[in-house]
Length: 181
Image 1 (cartoon, one colour):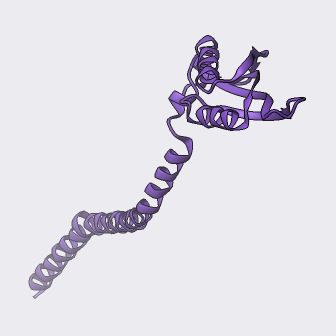
Image 2 (cartoon, helix red, strand yellow):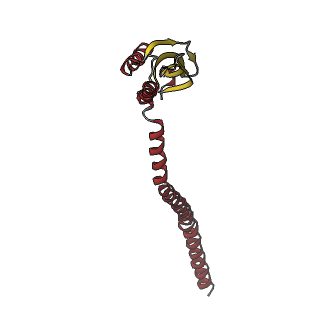
Image 3 (cartoon, rainbow, N blue to C red):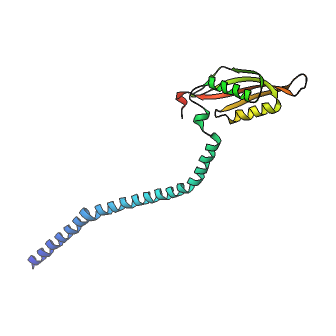
């Protein structure tokens, strides 16, 4: 009987060792792996939810981009990398001639340099009929280069013959290589 009890104890110990071995060697590693997979699944589900939310915002962002493109226009063309002042001044003179403006005086000022974006003030004077001056400003607005009109002064001629003398200050912009977008 003792022999039988020893056999039972040995079988019990072996069975207990197998259970402990199974738990330690198989169950616990698989449980840890399952917990890690569950965390990864939850993180990926949260990422998918965030992507779906952000994808819903995409149409409004595209509208904003389109709106900004319309407002800004072609920045590279409107604010060139180099001054190209001579060509711009020639364009001004050509526009004044196109609109039959007389007593033309175009005088560039000193460039104001900032960090990547620079500007040059340009003083302009001419005389003509108000309609011609108005058309000249309309043509300035249509130029490819960005121009800001800072000051406009219109003075009637002494005889009130319909001629107006225009004095204005415009500012043109240019970028340096460092200011390139």
